[in-house]
Length: 394
Image (cartoon, rainbow, N blue to C red):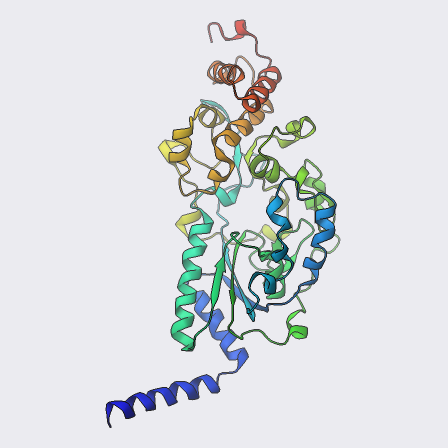
């Protein structure tokens, strides 16, 4: 057979394969390829207007977004507004749970030789999930191009675009939206990172069928609502971000309101309480990935880190320690501000380990020209009962 004949035969074979692959078969193959790329879950939804996104405007009008102005991006109203030619939304999930204790564990270590410890949210202990999931999404797109032999557009997002991932995940069949607004999967719980691919590939079933989500299995449980120290879950399925510890310690750049400082407790970056108390997470499996295990920079673990260590960092050290880490989002100033609050809530006494060093550092910050840091340092000093004479001989 001539070279041209060989090419024609190969083309006909591919064409035959494409024609006899139904939409559901293509979707199933996409899920298989997502698993091959390393994802724990994958589902597909149509690029449609999801009911929850219709209610987004009301949530914003109530002021629940706080200072997060990016949430007002009109493109968040529908995947079709983010990518008009999109036909499908591929939603992938990656488990980040570890075997380490939860923040609400009564046996957690509260002190060390250097003094009290803080809490960094579980998702931020290891590598930046934006990078980890981003690489896997790119690998999946490359595999889809090889598999389907057709031109298509694809845009991957990991908290980096105008997509409400958890809503898309619900309609892709990955779980339900819980009363704390997290996505819960019946087998994996809610310790899930989500990434999406908007694509022109026709993979989703008819819109009416695809918009029948998994049942809500929260039932009458309200543990997450009752456990929130700041009462951020103002009603089931509605979160007021302005009251949420994650917002206050990460997104808020100004002073933390006095009404919330004591209730923040020892949290210095994010909060896990509403997930820690969730019954669906009690048997959630731990990830085998090393990416999400607690880092140990300079011998300091990001699991329940020493507050004196965080407080003592300068900006250069912060950049080095939290390079390629989600914690970098709060910036050095925010982390030190949060450490001041956590120390103020620690109950630290003059006769306890680390008091003199911590009080001295707080005094330095209180005297700085940075009004935000000075205010929070002064608040912490007052809370731990500092007076200059208390450090003598310590």
